[in-house]
Length: 549
Image 1: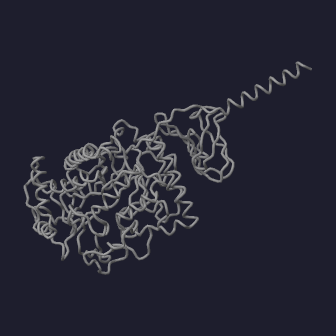
Image 2: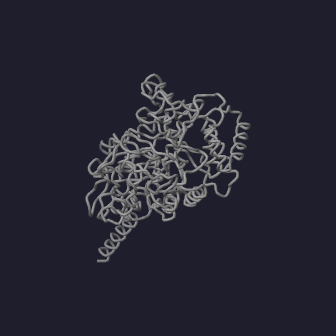
Image 3: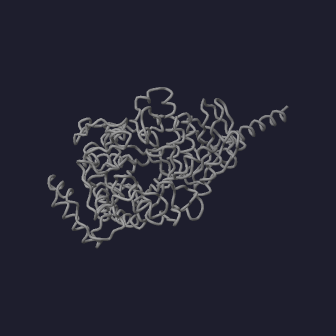
């Protein structure tokens, strides 16, 4: 009898010991959060269409003509962005950088583009690089917005234009021939017919290839004098050209004006518009000046410095795709923009790749970005934008799939305002790119269906922010059905399951986490333990986001 009791006690002890070991939390040394441009989630918005923070600046320069649908100023401004930063809106989405459309002073008149009159609400029709458009706000507004973002660890990308001025209107004269060409219009047959031409009719092209000294346009001089800042601007230009030894060629004037925003406000990076329409060495020159300005700002503002990251430059090389790796092919020559000042290029290929299944997309980007020539650079993926007329899910019928593919694919991710709220991209009565640019649908976020969409984007965005392995790590498929995969980067490991069944589910983690590891599913905020390479999750969701607790 004693022997039986002894054996029973021994059995209970062994079972108890095994259970404790199974549930024993494995001690893991986690890497602290560290910002990394290569893994950044960027939120892109049109300043005029995002949020109206100051209704007093909605009308300027008598911009009262009746325009085509969605081709007028609608009131969004810099203060509106600041308000949403303060609300924590970007934090909820895991946003690490904000890219907003240009806020430089726009042409005052309108243009008839055939689909109705259009004002420069989008910010790409610049009249004066040294001033902000009052519809967008003031220099003080810009400083407050940048400081507020930095206070939350969010970086700022300034959208810059070096290729062209704004169109000519009855109140906006053309710049001198020494500065711009007004013909021919680009035909995109080769490098010459892409770079030394106007993008479209009536969009004067800056002669960025010129090395000749030029005087300032008389209209700009007169404007500065009327505003009482001519002497100040001229003194700064004289100092710039004296220090840099550059000729007074058109591109160098503009480079000075652009880098002033870095030196003054601590801008973290440039998103460069129409990059392929200039000789690539111009971007190398801008990069050098931008890095110097950023270094100077850091030296002058040591208490405001976020980290040791260098100035970041992102290029819009329209039509570039990751399959070309480092090169863009003009037909008669290939250009490596990564070797000319840029850390990242916008990847126009992703909207087409997103039509494929998860496994294809994730393996493709894992493979390409981990090739030796791409190790020190990256690409930025998107599913919709302000000028891509072929977005993935233009009808907003696949909002969950869109989030999964965009936020879980290796590389940078660009959320276009309204991706996370299913803002319509098909507006009746609009023509061309205007349909992509409706005002942010804030009112829809109170709807349960839209809130569920936002919550999904939010959970993925926050998980992506904390786990750099998603953007930088090595991809491995664990099971095909249901689709479960892992990413590993340095000490960071995650396992993600997509389109699972609701309720109780068993998910394989392969050999990523050892038995006994205590994990947290960030999607449902549920704790679980690895047993025989599996975990059990009981949640009403179809997604699991697993990492060490």
